[in-house]
Image (tube, rainbow, N blue to C red; front, top):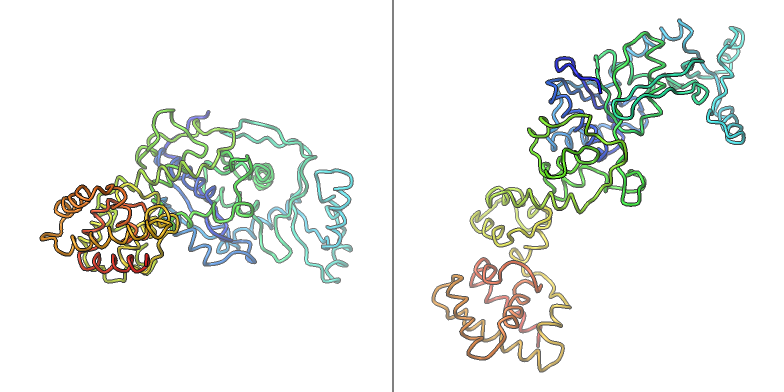
Length: 486
């Protein structure tokens, strides 16, 4: 692989603001960012909004927000719709040199050409019929009101594509057609704007997904026709699902949306570690990398050629790891917005020590920050349902067993009401004394009480729950459970 001169590296990411940032797009941004920083270079964000019909300001903002959330910060930024005059100048050059031409095909003609190509099993879907129009023909089409596109002329000689990951190959020009580079509405398309901006911005390396492989020879043709320097290309493998299918918005919905993970309480550090391993590997030992380590270790030689499988379980493991690295205060800060969004907590935080106590009681049970809501909602409200399976197992499904449970809860309530000090040690000792004297299985008593206080049969330590709820709340909830059993 060609060695890179550190002072020359300039790379870019060019997302289209037509929806949320795709996981694959985040990976492209990350690879470019790490490559630039590894070589002390420049990372450019270039918004490809030339598809005016589909581009939106909301999508553009979402891309910004997602990248900032991941701490993928750009050094320079450009918006292609603001560079129209630059593209127009290059298009004029292509037309004047004869390397491009106006095409007056109607939609009906194009559809007929495509049908014929499919019938003949041809790779080209345009037959070049308007390559060499006479001035009279042009005048006639203009009089008819036809709005032309502009097409680049594909040369007759093979097109060489050098790729830092996939190697070199020659593309047979017979497999390509004269590409539309300017739409009939006058807007330039991706292949034209991309290679022009790469040259104008002195991009040294184009690192992008293999879905762009078919665009590369076309962009090289445009660059050669304009006499522009061609950057080095590096196409990174597709992100695949467990069945080997490309992860796409169409087939996988918001599973590929970066903002989905932010909203569900994944940490950016986990996402970065997960995304970077979709195609890049360092060794078989290290699983967790800091950003500084990634910058130090990242290079294209360790990027694979084959697709990488999106494993949500791996992401969940990473996220749990990073959540558990947070101390109680930081973890509490992280979960407060999720409590607030669920309506469990208002903007007035209230008793901060109490909230931290809840987080400490939950311990290492969080896979995502959002998990804090179902795991702790009972601390904030008693408006919960008793879990049917838990009720049947621990409260009993016969009148005799339910009566026994009522008796246990009544006695525990009395013990807690009379207890001198409402702390874990005192509570635990008093309840164990009761269960041992009455020959009641500890687990039966504990689960009966847990369901009464939380509605579920699992969760943090029961005695933590009792203390965090407080004496008044506990003594209010137990009679409610007894009434339910009646």
